Length: 150
Image (cartoon, rainbow, N blue to C red; front, side):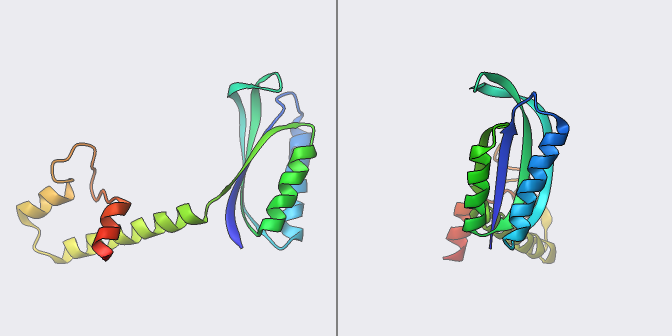
């Protein structure tokens, strides 16, 4: 099972009840296939960046799910044939979540090392980003972590 975000845009003239019906259909597909729904977020009516099917705005809905590829394919197939849905996007989140977890663990490890060390003026300069503009406290890039691991 992998983590996905599915966002779709519904015709702005669609009734709230019909949007809820679409959400329940998608939730049913996920649960019947053995997946789990992490979050359903109705983001509301927003202006689109460009005209889609002659619409300037749409109702955004976000699903965060844990499912396999066959469930996601079925959801995409259903969204494709639903008339009120004007656009959809599915994003695989596993790689991003792993990278964020790795960065968070690295920052915690560095904070623990700093906490046990002497500190002093040198420690204060390094924790503030060493005078580099744009680097907040503990700003660690992926490249720095990979170099440190080697």
